[in-house]
Each structure stands twice: as structure tokens, then as C-alpha cells.
Image (tube, rainbow, N blue to C red; front, side, top):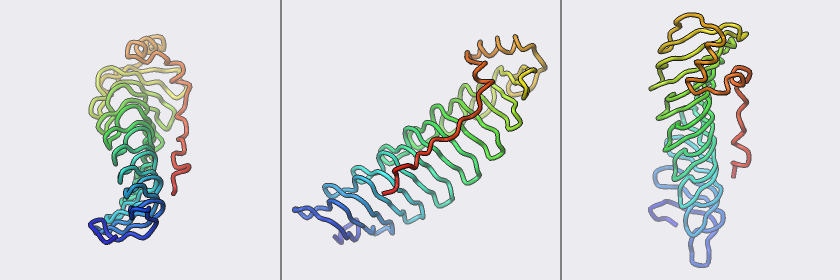
Length: 219
């Protein structure tokens, strides 16, 4: 096939439509190698984009659909679910900086509930919107301190509480700024008022390891 989509080498059905396994080189420089059905990319495959990005995973109706791994030319990597070409559902995004986000995505953006583990050892568990921390969250420092509160557009807003590494001291926060020590009973009461009802569990738990989304992705 030397049409608009480029050159195709592979299986055809009785009607001459691409079906089964095949490789196509596109006119824009991209290349696909994988499964076809009824003349469209469908099933498992790999696509090398002309800009250097690469995708390996599931396709439907010529689009990324299902689970897969998208490696960007800048070094970032996304592993997880796609819908209609976009990151949507659950996944892991590994930034070239060393930061890693695991959680929910919507319309190609970090959005919903998730955990971001930073290269410096800190971690944030909570709500995100439009690629930013937005809503309730738990911030765990690499040195063991824990902080709870609410973010708006990445910035701490309103009341919050911070605990020491050994959980024997607590401080009241306002817009992310320390406003002095408080009794542990007061800290617990504030946490409950802010909507963190399982504070004992929050203070005991550590960030869990990432699920391996890449299993079974390669075509």
C-alpha cells in the first residue's frame, strides 16, 4: 500500500485490507509494527514517532487505547492506561528529573488521586488537578516529618498540621507557614476537622512502592 499512510508490508485479508501482523512506514517519518484488523492498527504494537517519541502497547481504531508505555524524546516515560490517544485512567509518569507520579490521569493530565515521589526523597499523596496539587494532601518529608493540609494551584492554603519524625511534637500551619507548637490532642482534632479521619494510620504508614505497569506491554 503506497497511499496516504505510507508503505505497508504484512498480512492482508481476502479483501486486500491490512489484517494480522504488519509494518507500516508513514509519510511523516513515523513507523508502526504490530497487529492490524479491518485495515486499522488494532491490538498490540509499537509506534515510533517522527519526533523521537515511542509507544509500545495496545491500539484500537488507529489510536492508543488500553495499556501501554510512551517514552518521550526528552526522557520522560509514562506507563499505564490510554483512551482515545490520551493518558487517561491509572498510570505512572517518570520524569527525567527523577520525580515519579503514580495515580490517576484525565485528558492527558495528572488529575485525580495519586502520589508523587520527588527525587529528593519527599512524597506527596493526595488530590491533583491540571498537573498540580489541588485539594487535600499528605506531604511526607524524606527526614520522616509528616504534614497534612490543602493545596490550591500547588500552594498550601488554609490550616494544616505538621508532625515531627518521632510523632511526639506537632505544629499548626497556616498557608504552609509554621505558627507554633500545639498539643498532640489538638493536632489530632485539627486533622479530623480538615477531613483526615484516619490520622493514626497516616502517621504510621509510609509511601508504598509503585506497581509495575509495564508487565505484558511489549508487543
